[in-house]
Each structure stands twice: as structure tokens, then as C-alpha cells.
Length: 207
Image (tube, rainbow, N blue to C red; front, side, top):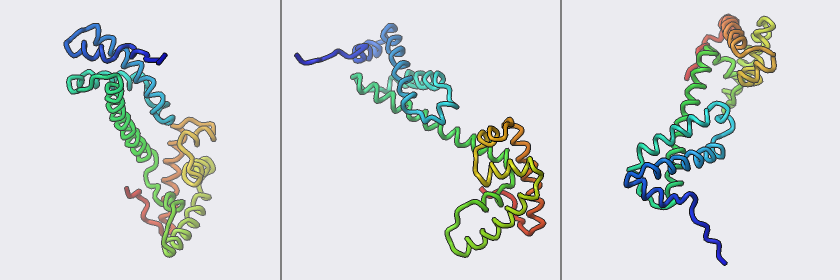
């Protein structure tokens, strides 16, 4: 006997009734949408974003957007409605990703002004001449880092030379992120002073 399980909770019927203004159907459709979107968020959102984004807020935002745009939905089946919700969710996730990217860039700009010499010293270079120049710059930068006070030197080495994240650096040193930011600022200021005296004058980060 073939298994033809009915759609649950009869999304096609709810869609039909919701379109003619039946409030109970709208409420049931909203309830189903929340459950569906919560599962989609958990399976779609990258782990690094899940720890930074409130799942309930994102689900609520997508539900609100979907119901504001409900009149634009032309489908009639469970599958069509689910796919439409996924598109609305994907758009909002992309907005979250872009917002986090810009926030991360602003954090770096606030945290680490004037870090171009250190970044250049550890960056990849392709041309032989540029590699030679950067090899000399790297030697100068490493020597300058060694001249920093111990606490500043350790932070700069972990954050820039070993390229740990701010959180990883703070954890490694047993300090708060704010304390690490303060050490970085002072360390970078001192490092740039040393580097200017060594002839590396392009100390501002060009982005």
C-alpha cells in the first residue's frame, strides 16, 4: 500500500485560507514558519556566525519580512512556500554576513591603526624583487618587535606574527580582550616609532 502522507500541517490549505484573510490560518502558518526557519537557521548558519547572531531574532526578522511580503508569494504548495521562505532567509543571512564583515573591519581599524609594516612583513609576495624587499623589511620589523616592552612584544607577536585572533590572543595570555587591545595600541605606537627611526616611514594601513 503506497504511503501518501498528507502535508503537515496542511500548508497548502493554510496558504489558501490565509490568502482570503482567515486569521486562524495565518496564525498556524506563522507557527509552522517559525519552526521551519529555526531548523533552517541551525543547518544553514555558519558556526562562527551562530555564536554571534541571536537565532530567535533572525527567525523573527525573517517571519516578519515574509508576512509583510506574503501578497507577493504566488505558490500554492508546501514545497513552494518552504523554498520561498528559504530565499527570504538567505537574503537576511547575507545581510548578517556583510554586517559582521564590516563590524570586523571596523574593529581592526579601531584596534590596530598603523599596522601595515607588521602585516606586510608576514604577507605573501609574488615577485622576486618584492620578496627581497619584504625579506629586508621583515628582518627590520622582527628586530623592532624585540625592542618592545615584554607585555607589548608578546601581544604583537601573537596577534600579528602568529596571526591569532583577538579572542585567541586574550585567551593565550589570560587577559581580557580590552586589555589586549590596550597593549596592542601602545605596542604598535612604539613599534612605529622604532620603525620610523629605521627608515620605514609608510606606517599607515592603506585600505
